[in-house]
Image (cartoon, rainbow, N blue to C red; front, side, top):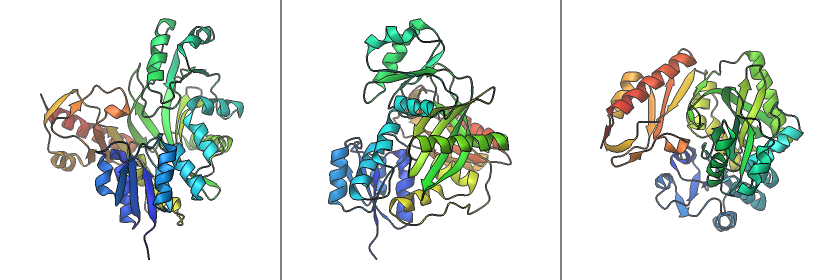
Length: 399
C-alpha cells in the first residue's frame, strides 16, 4: 500500500521530532522551510526551500505533490498556510477564519474579552507610533507590550513607566511580521502552559504545565513541569476555561497551545494562544511523560485522516524541562553530553556545535537546547534538570 504523504511546514530543530516520528509511523514526509540549511531536511523524504508564511507558494507545492495531510508545529508562522492548504484541498485542519484570527493576538484578546472567557480587562492595538500618545492616556502601569503575531517571546516586554512605553512599542513592532503591537495590563501571578487537541468535536485538554520564566523586562520560558501543582478544583477550572476559549475562537480541529497566568486571587488570564503543538519539547517529551498519551503520534495520524486514540498508554510520571539558557560566548569546546546525561539521569537535546555564538537569553530563540528529567515529583525533576543544565554551562569552553 502506498504511503500517505504528510506535508510539514517548518524544518527547524523543534520540527525534527515531528518529522522523525512521522517517518517512524510509516508516512512519507515533505518539509518546507525558508532556510536552505534547515536541520529538518536531513530527516525528510523530500523538501523544498519555501517560506511557510507564503500561503500561495505553500498551497501550490501541496497541490503539485498530492499530499494527504498538512501540519505545522512549534511555530506560529505556518498556521495560516497550514489551514489554507487543508481548507483548499479538503484535508483535516483548523478552519481558515479561526487560524487567521489566532495569528493576531490583539484580535484573540478582543474575542476572549467579548465572550467573557477569562478575567483580563482592556487591551490596545498599536499599528503606528502616532497612536502612542492616545493610548498612554488610557494606561495604568505596569503593562505588557507584545507583537500581535510574534512567536517565542520575541518582542515581549514589561513596561513600568510612561517614559519607557515608546521604546517597548518599537521593540514589539520590530518583532511583528505585520509591524503591529498590542498592550495588555501586567498580571502578577504564576504562568502555566496548557496543551489541548480538538478531534472529532471533542476538546482534549492533554496537560497543564507550571512554567518558569525569565525576570523582567523580558519574559521568555525557562522550563516546564508536570504535574502543575494546582489543586484539582483549580485544574478543573482551567480546563473549563480553555474549552470555553476554544469555543469562542471557533477552533474546530487540531493542536492548541495556550499560556495563562493565575493571579493571587485565583483570577485566570489567557496571555497567548497558538493553533499548533507547543514548542520547547512539550509535544515530544513533556506531555508524553506527564500524561502517558502519545500526543505527537495522534497529531500526525489525525492530520492524514487516520484514527487517533487519546487514552494513556502507560503510567504518567512527574517531568520537568529546562531550556539551555547559557552564559554568552563563542563555543570552542563542547562538554561530553552523554556523560552528563548518564551521571545526572536526564535527557539532553541540543543543537550546539563548535563555533556557535551563544547569545544572552532574552527569547526562546536564544536557547541552545533542552534538558528533560523525571523524578518522584515535579520538584525533584526540576532539580535534576537544573543540575544537568549547570554542568553543561560550566563545561562549555568559550573563546
